[in-house]
Length: 488
Ligand SMILES: [Zn+2]
View (cartoon, rainbow, N blue to C red):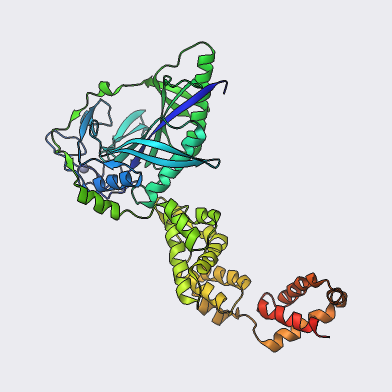
C-alpha cells in the first residue's frame, strides 16, 4: 500500500418492490416484451402528468427507518436535466436539496472488527429506460421503455469505507436488510440492486480527500471487490509515477480485469436541478412516520440474536438460516410447529433440532429467485417428521430416508412410515435377540469390555444398528447392551 489510504463511498440504486411504476400505473414486472409496459407518462409524452405512487414512497421511508435515517417531514422531487436516448423527457425525476431520508448509518464487521458507516441520504427517483445495442439485422440501438419510471431508492454512503473488504461487507449487509424489509429483491443479475463506487486515495494521515474516480454499475459482489482493488492500485501507480488522478467516470471491464475511462465526471451543477413544478412536496407527519416505524419487520441482525437467545442456535447456524428471508420464515414456522407437536419440548430444543435438520437435509433442495424461494416440502411436514423422531417411532437415521421419500412423493412422514415399514424396532425381545447375537459373534470385544475397556460399547451399538439396518431404537439397544454386559 506504500503509505496510501483508500477512501471509498458507495451509491446504491435499489429497485423498490412496487407492483407499479413511480409516477404511473404501468407494471414493473421484469422480462416482458419490449415497450409493453408503457403509457404517456413513462414515455415522457408532452402534457402527461406524474402522480406519485404512495406505496413506493412508503417503502422508501421504510428503508430510511431500517437504516437509522431521519425521515424529512417535507421533501421534494427535483428534475435532474441531461440528454440521453433512454430518457425521453430530457430529465429524470429525482430528489436534490430536500431528500426523503438523511443521516443514517449501517454497522459492518470485517475480520471481527465492528465499524459504523454513515449514510448521507436515501432519496427516491425514477429509473431510466434501457438502450439495447446491436439488436436485429443492422447494428442499431433500440430503446425499451419498460424500465422507464421504475421506482428506485438511491442510498448514498459517507466516504467512510477504507478498503474493498469493507465495501463488500457494506453492500452485503445493505442488500440483506433491504430484502428482509421487503423493499428490494436483491437480484443483482437483473439489475435491481446496482452499485457505483467513488474511489480515491490519499497519503496516510492526510485528512483532505484525494481526487476521486467513479466506478459505474458494478453488478456482482465479486466484481465490486475486484474493481475497487484494481482502481486503488491504478491510482497508486498514477501518483507514484508523478502523475495526477483525474476526476472521471470509469467502468469495470471484467474480461480485461481493469477499469477504463468512460467520460469526465459531471458535477451536480451540470444537471441544473430545480424543483419539479408538476409534483407537490411530500409531507410526512410524526404520527405517520411512527406508524411506519412500528410496522417495520424484524431486521436480520435482531432475528439472529433472538434465535441464538431463544431458539438454541449457534451464531453460525443463525447465519445460514437467515441467508434468505423465506428460509428464515420456513425455519421459524417449522420450529414453532415442532414445539407445539412434541410433548414438553422447549422452544430452544425444537429450534436446535429443526435448525440442524434444515441445514443437513432441506437446504440442498431449496432454490431461490430474488425474494421468492421453493421448498421441497412445507415447514409443518418437517415438523411432523421430527415429531415422529421425538416420540421414538423412528430414529434420526431413518428420518433422513423418510424425508427423501417425502420429497419424492409429497406424502406425509406418518403415511410413509405406515406404508413402508420404516418404523423403529422397539420390540424388547427382538432387540435383545439381536444384541445377544452380536455379543456371541464378538467374544474378544466382550472380554475387552469386561476388562474395563467400556469404550467398545459404541462398537456393539454400531453392530446392532447395522444388523437392523438402522431401525432399532438406539436408546433401547444401549440399555440392553449394558444390562447384558454388566451382568455377572
Ligand atoms: Zn407508464
